[in-house]
Length: 274
Length: 262
Image (cartoon, rainbow over all chains, first blue to last red; front, top):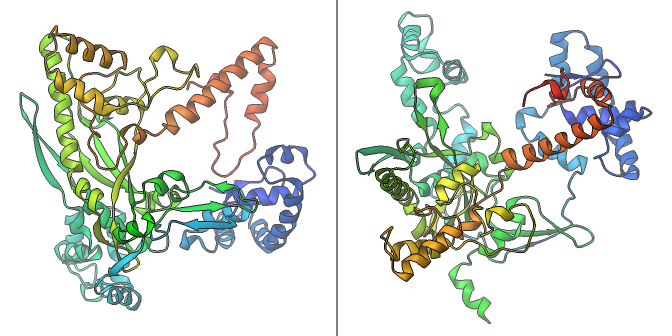
């Protein structure tokens, strides 16, 4: 829900934009200063404040144009965050706000996270993803209809009704019943066999209790194999330092534990022994 | 290396279906940055298992004590089964296909277990007033008095194994019982014991939501309320509290702090 600025009529969707606005447009208000204590020191603040307010100027106007119109509000907030579909907004914002320092120098653990081979048919898989983003569905319409069915939790019988009553056109979407839709859904996640459930039984002296679990190693395989995570996965520990040479601790791989436990490839053990 | 982060919590399902409980165990990996893995839409946290819930027991009769032991062993057995695939891979590494099309030799190692304190108590087999990380006696908790040795769960377990009988009167048994008693060890093994390349006391992570944030905030507010009461300024504080401006992601209080139950 967008928040209305307490001092004027502009509306903001995200905390970062709102703070920038407060800092630039209402900088003379004492209460604003009190609420921005956690922000960078004054010299950095004025520099950044002017920078960002320049960049945000047109956006703010578009926001205030639509202030009382609900439909306009959403349009304004969409313009406010054009990259939201990429979902990387929060991180870039944190970097801009400079709430934690960016590493000036970094040291990688030698030899850690090295590749030992190539995944077969990986290139084909990526190419297929690019060439036909709607696969395994025949068309965009087929995909959208299916995701609408699933997200609005339409029951299986109702989906079957949808096709058998002739409301929907099965030729254009590529499936004609819940059964064929389920087959397609199975193709959607090719690694789902990794997530198979296993059944175990334990005895507690009186009765045998069943319980269900998954193979941990397969769960790891599943997560590491997700192409969606390709740009975010970290394979090796790293030590990060800021300009003055101070160590920065941020994500898990920049802390000590991973570095200490990291296992070297066997060939490197001998190198290290010298 | 693939650091595995586990999570578990017993949950009451009373609201859904009578007197039922569920005990889900989740896992994710530390290779994903925390911003990605903690985002609900990224699907990075997998349900690893649903554990059996031992039946609730009335206060301790002798038969129940035995049942408690059996339950603890059962729990241990379940976790051993779930973690079994890890040990070989953690020792030797396993080739795993990665998202960038490369194969890497991966060492999946349990790195942390996120749970609230009562959950840790169950999993580590300690008493509810004991610390899962070190051997600080309960009465010294929070006093900052001295440094205490990290817990050595292997030792407790050895003591227990070597002295299986609860009531034997030999010197060794008495000593073992005394040690485990003073260190706040309930009978029953620690479920994480025996994992390759894992130091059991290090698995315990501070419970941010329950202990750190909530605890600190409540403590601070109690102090402030007391202070304001002493100086008869409560009304001024309530006015300021209610006048807080709105901010994205921040819920504006409509009532005074002391009028709300927490």
